Amino acid sequence: AVFRKDYDTAIKLFTQAIAEDQKNEKLYANRAATHIELSNFEEALEDAETCIKLKPDWHRGYFRKGVALEKLLRYQEARVAFKEGEKHSPDDASIKKALTELESVLNELAISLEETAADNPDNDRFGKMVKWMKDGGCKFPKLYLKYYSEDYRGVHSLCKIPANDCVLYVPLKYLMTNEVAMESEIGKAIQKSGYEMRSEHSWLAVYLIQEKHKAEKSFWKPYIDILPDKYGNMPMLFGDVYKNYLKGSYALTMADNRMNSLRVEYEGICAACPAFRKYMFLEFVWGRLAVITRIFGLNIHGKKTSALVPYADMLNHITDKQTDWQYDDKRKGYTMITNKAVARGEQIFDSYGRKCNGRYFVNYGFTIDNNFIDNDAVFKVRLPPNDPHFGMKLKYLHGQPMREFQVPPTYSEDVSVLSENMKPRNMFSFFRFLHARDKELLMVSSVDGYQIKDINPISIRNEIEVLKHIQVVARASLANFPSEMKLDHQLLKVNKFMDMNHRNCVMMRCGEKETLHWYIDLADKAIPLLKMKWKDLKRKAAKCHQVPTRFNYYVTEVVVPLVKNQK
Image (cartoon, rainbow, N blue to C red; front, side, top):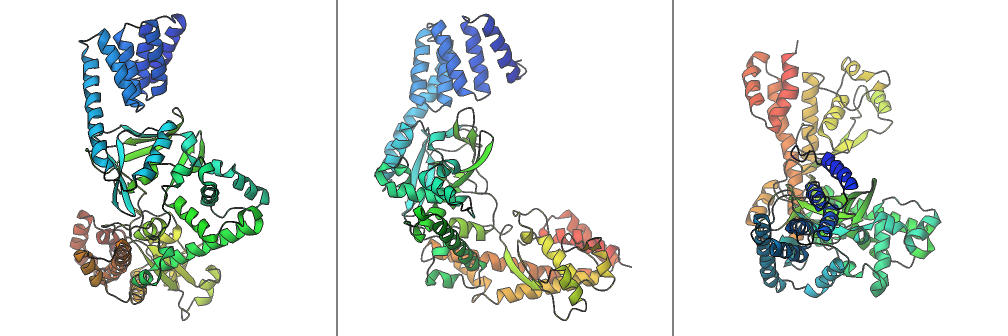
């Protein structure tokens, strides 16, 4: 079974054999090796320990113990185990290789720690958190925190780290979960009050506030002490200077809505739960921002929850992530595993997922470059009051003539959004419904009335009107910005900004303008194609099919079928 790599079966067979011969050290050694293949490192260590007890002078037991300890990030203990194995078999190639590699890592780690210690201006506060975590069984021997500026830091590697290597382990006790928050003093008080949280993030926020007020009496003090005191990079807390840079951007509305939502949540909790009234609104804002910028979604013993994970929440974002993480039920803790090799001194990143800069900016306080495919813009569209079918269409819009869409620059369904109003095809469907006339309305009707989404292209006339209308809305949105897109491009190219907030504001508004211009260009290029005869369009269509661009996708999916099938 081992040779076939059927390790689960091998474990069962070794277990059966051990039941019949409990004094056979080789069976324990082999089961330990199999457990290592399955990443059951605690079980492997236990079997290795038993093997050593049965035959203290056999090197193989110490080798298995060393490997298990190394996988558990207990490097010094692993070194001792390998050294003991070397005493019993000085020429064993496996032990020699393992010991040489481990000592190389330990030497590199020692040198790296000396190099990096002086670079940490906040070493005392962070050092206390590291000690607190290590004392509680957290493991991260290959990582260190590097400071770039007062508000910007990242996690780096102390040595070369291979792929599929566990770089961080945080036991359950050090995970601040929703359940921990709800079972706290303030959590129970809110539950008893009967108030229903509008957001599950509020449970952790109120718990953070409570624990911050406890100061030295809180178990979480070393962790809370390293959290930012303020969130000046978050748009919802911007003053007039930065707001002026965002004039015309939907980020302002999004930030205001977020702040208003927090106000409603705070006042709701205070109204229902007297025990919470001693905390100020800005403390609640701080707690919610701390949560949303650091939260992890975990599945602990089959139950989904949210958690704050010390150290793990300090990794910065990159789209092409370098790590995978989860709650490991076997190890009873959070584990972070590299999915690719990391060079010595290199920053280690996590991914917050594909998002538009609006969500990165408002939720996390940063933007990213080269995010064109996921950036978006807001399109506000109204059923024209002069529409000959205005009354009938308004009825199926439930009396709401206005719709708002926040969409990326594409017609493809490969988008990083889940909300229905953020899918480009739904926006096109709505515009097609608005511009459907006479018999075309039959094409979008169903037993339950008219469809408002999932409407395929109806006719050439209809699609041209759709594109023209989208173009008008896009130009109107662009008019809300006091500066043109080319100025933003110039500013970003020169890259001399007052600070990162200034740069993020320009990056944010530039992404919106680029999206709006894409839709304007789409109409300019697609409308002439829709007016062509099939025999003239055929050659152009073939080229569009061969070269996968967003415009060509629209041509292939929309223009070609309409022109080809016109009567």
